[in-house]
Length: 218
Image: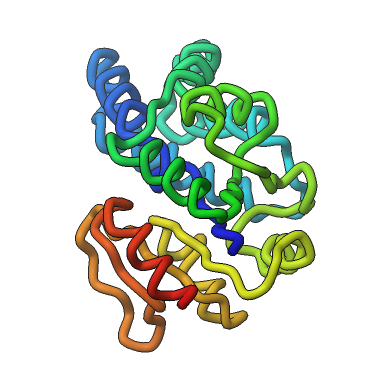
């Protein structure tokens, strides 16, 4: 069976990015939480504008908008390379590689569906010990999740039925609900799903995924 995964937050621990942005802002007299909030806000806005920027270019534009909004000149923009380095050094959650290996040894294909870019994904695949069979990125789909065309493109690449695994609720669980995909919500933040948009399954992390996949496939 094909099993698709979101990357950021689901497979890779992205907390170092938040930690860096908050600490960097605080060190320069900017409220750290405001810096992080503006980063996330502009990243999402840029993803869903009319033109699909490559993710690395999007991050650079994100920092420029942060500087504009926070009135910090070019403070954040000047540290674009530091941000990219952080992305390239992200590491998996402790259970991830063993779970991916177990799934592949059981005959399943592991496929990443991510709002990333090929240059960053090369580093991420190294971090994941290359326990991945295929990647689907905005460079192919010409849009970012949660846009339904992203999922439509992926559907044409996948064996059916398949299972999607993701931590992102708005980016992954919601579009899966809209199009009828079976979805496992990796609820690391212990959130409560909306009453009318429920994932097929919910797990606190990936540890229980192989057993769930076995049950789902059976």
